[in-house]
Structure formats: C-alpha cells, structure tokens
Length: 121
Image (cartoon, rainbow, N blue to C red):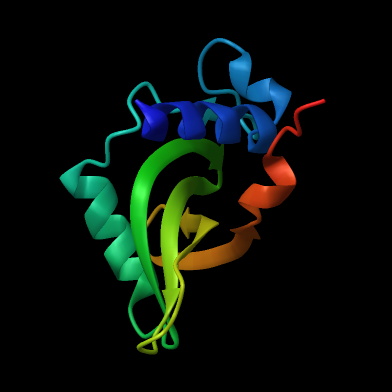
C-alpha cells in the first residue's frame, strides 16, 4: 500500500500535467496503467544499465512513457552506492528507447524524500 502511495505521489510531482491527457500524444507523458514492472520493461532497463558502475539501481515502479522519435521511459528505482555501508536512496531513472531497440540513460535524478515530506503544524 505504501509503495503505491509513494508511486502516486511521485507521478503527480514528476510527470508533467500533459500526461493526464487521453491517449499518447507525441511529446506528452502517459502514466502507466500499472506500476508493476513487466519482463519487457525489466529487459529494457537491464540493457540501458549495462556497463554502469558505482551505483546499483533496482527498478521498483514503472511510472510512465513519453513518445518521441522512440520512447522515453521513467522508472522509480532503489539506488545504492556499491560499498558495504551504503544507505539506499531513491532515484528517478529516465531511459530512451530508440525505434531500433537501442537504449540509453537520459537522466538519473536522485530523490530527497525528506524534501517531499509534509511537516505537521
């Protein structure tokens, strides 16, 4: 339940308002109908992350896609620097998938959960 609430909050904060439009408009983000990561999305993520060293990213939620000359994808990931005492964090990982299947990381945006929290008055 908490995982879905966090995913919904992040979708509302991160994906632009145009994502709420019907259909897949060119350039507009489409929120995923299900945040569960499919085998195809996991394979896409794994291809894009090949060769990335230093931080281990594990996709937790698939947030959505954006049609461009290919497709941009957004994943909420658990991130941990590769060292024994590393504390896990969260990050948004944006991946571009070209029409020919080539993938590349567009951006990795760390999330500061403390900055998102609401303070009691």
